[in-house]
Image (cartoon, rainbow, N blue to C red; front, side):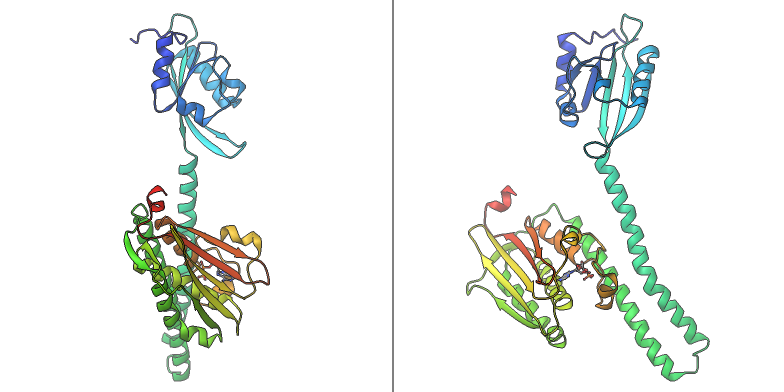
Length: 353
Ligand code: ADP
């Protein structure tokens, strides 16, 4: 048998104040007698001395508190608040022993909102990844069946089909590679890279390795970099990947016969690299979503160009792991600029980030 609790006693309020969880103590009339700091942070409108139901008017919550207050015991409910933003709470309501015929109640709030958003993202991600893999897989299987059946003895068709099958296989391989890179970068997200990496050197390597692709699209690549090395605290392979994705995109989605400028700049605590094209640009409504996995402005154009829809998601995660930031500027008809700003090697800004 529990000792009776007086919800108005200073010692009770002091205990509730000391708790780390989001907790609220109601007296037998449903009036708030004590709140923990986490509870105040969760729902700032709550005030001591006021009925809880003045702020949270949910009928299920009101019923559950009433029941516990009359009969004791415990209840658990989920509450979805839609204003000002959608939030989901799981609320544990426990009746406390007291002298009166109604009991005080102790409510513990768990904020499930982030968990729900993560869950939804995970489900969407699995669905998207499966869909992206299924399309080339279906095409591969279709061609295998054709080669086993109607085209069995058709040498010309066989060569043509094998070329397409190779392309579809490569597309699946690219997708799996990108998925693996993304999960590897995410796994190490909390470990900021520490080795000095020269951004100019990285940019030069990428310009060299993409020269052929640029020539095929008749795109001129121009590199502007200071004469001294520009050293950031980084992971060399990841920074190569970041530059490769940005420059490849600029060549793919920029203008044929256009120009792509890669500009490396150095500062006191930060260095940056900007990749600018003079292509059709991106409409403003797409900008905030570009770094989402599988988000494309024009899905057919992306597939045509061999895109997986994961390039910019990888770029964003690399920048975040480097404790830097990514800025995208564009206007329709005026090209696009993708700028990664990274902490310089040895700068304190990195530690404060
Ligand atoms: P993808 O594999 O499709 O290239 P990304 O994540 O690299 O995937 O890019 C996402 C989308 O952003 C692309 O499909 C394209 O629509 C758009 N995009 C990226 N870079 C540029 C650019 N430089 N100019 C115009 N659109 C771009």
